[in-house]
Amino acid sequence: MKPDILVVCGPTASGKTALAVELAKQLNGEVVSADSMQVYRRMDIGTAKPTPEEMGGIPHHMIDVADPEENYSVACYVRDAIPVVDGILARGKLPIVAGGTGLYIDNLVAGRAFAPFEADTGLREALQQRARTEGLAVLREELAKVDPEAAGRLHPNDEKRNIRALEVWLSTGKTITRHNLETQAIPPRYRALTIGLNFADREDLRRRIDLRVDEMMARGLEQEVRCLLESGVSETCTAMQAIGYKEIAAALREGRSVSDGAEEVKLRSRQYAKRQLTWFRRNQGVNWFSWEKIPDFSRAVAFSTKLAHDCGLQ
Image 1 (tube, one colour):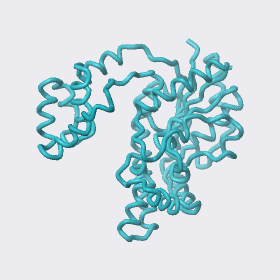
Image 2 (tube, one colour):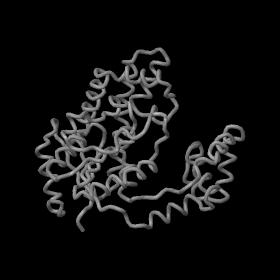
Image 3 (cartoon, helix red, strand yellow):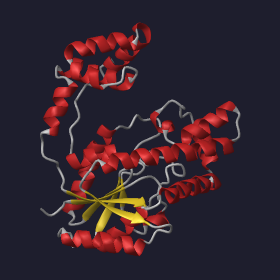
Image 4 (cartoon, helix red, strand yellow):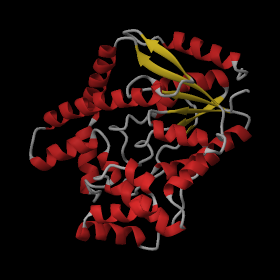
């Protein structure tokens, strides 16, 4: 069947945004960002947020939709992105979902509903307090009694997900395992044509990542981090765990050279790229396009538009 949406995925610094913009021009599309950190306002340099020039006049969505202090999650993303995608389709245009956060992409395509709970009941805070005073192991024992599958699947030290699983049970009377099984049985919300970007030689990707970090530092990543901290954004909040921000903030706090922090950013970015590729390669439906040493966007556009034509998108 004809796809509803086009997905452009791949590791960090692989040219996803630039290709998405060119495809939007060719295919009458609009770009929907699938980047878990570009959702945050005032975090532009370290997230490689596209500039107006890089957007090329193409509407971009799901950028700057949350404040750094917010605990924005995949559930929030799916909730907010579905109306965006549906709106693009209603206008007769092609949604082009572009980004490197595989969890966001997969759940948006699926249209997955997340286990509900009452966020204002104080239950999560109470469970967090119990974890501090009684120990997480006590909460895991309770979880194992009602949802042994979840307890066996979750790491014993993963406080966030263990508390979440227990919270769902206490809030809804339904285990998170049962909820997930019911959700997975529902057909995907969207049919996606997926294009994956990578480099033929992984050393070229590593060099591109290092160059991007150098460019971020030259553009003022240190000052961006300082401004966030000075405005009251805590180092412990979700946004500040992003690669680039966490390392520079730590260097500033510890009185180390920011150049040391930048080297750490490069290392963490390369490690993240490896994890991204592992995630995307699990999807057998990805149509991979490999760059040579220097990306050739005209060839990538030709490759992608042919796939789109063959699928009925042109």
